[in-house]
Length: 376
Image (cartoon, rainbow, N blue to C red; front, side, top):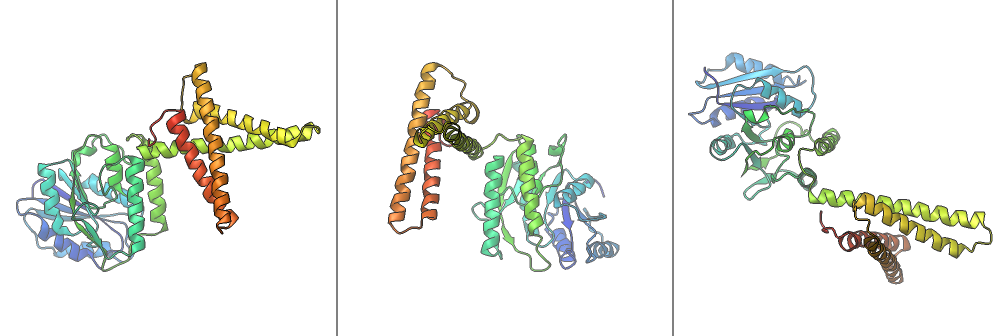
């Protein structure tokens, strides 16, 4: 057979109950005019998945324009590395990646091929666009998936609705010159971050939870996901999203606030201990003034990176900063008093008061003191 047009990568681990059915189903789903190869990448499955595929190949009745191959790996590493291993051996110009447990229906393959041929460079089979859905997952699993998707989209600034999909296709030449670590939870996220300028299309499909075999979702998978998000964020291939910039500056703002608390405490304590005649309230006032001044300077330079040090601007900003900080303290006191008098416990009331005042303090200073957009 000549060069295949499409290579289907099928990573497997303990899929003995599904592998033969999925291979037959894939073969039936390949359009008649398309030559294709399916590459099974087996991570030394203890249940004999690799041996079953070998037996299948020995008895396989040849189909014109279609072949099945298997890659035996010595040990189970990561899903991403298995997929990359398969891509390295792929001969087709079009790569399709899918699971072997029927959660990714093979009858979607023709739609992937057609979309890639006519409209885009990457096509994602999506659970999260109109017409897509998930069947068979408990509510907890759906929440975890949605939450993970929201994090990936916002932290990595990815536009695709389902960047964690394991069912997708792309032109193989897109990966030229791109170095992939292959350690990630989902290789699609890495492609979407590192391949710049690609045209992306999503098509809906129904994700059906596996009927046979065990789910691969566990604590290690979640740990891998977190590592992937962190590595890809640090990669720098994507501009940080507005939510990431907002949270990043908020973290710096509250770090400065913590340093201000320490300054306030140390100065107040030192004045009363080193100067016995110094009244504790005067010491506390000086501690507060020192903390506010320190907080303003650090937030100006570090948090908001404002480089305008003209006297007028500094005086105006400092006055606003002190005013909003004082307003935040008043709001906190008002909330705590109202909730406690209304029957709430003091710890709960204090928590709500502190959080409300802290968020308001940050947003007011961001918008009105340092003249930044609120979200971003």
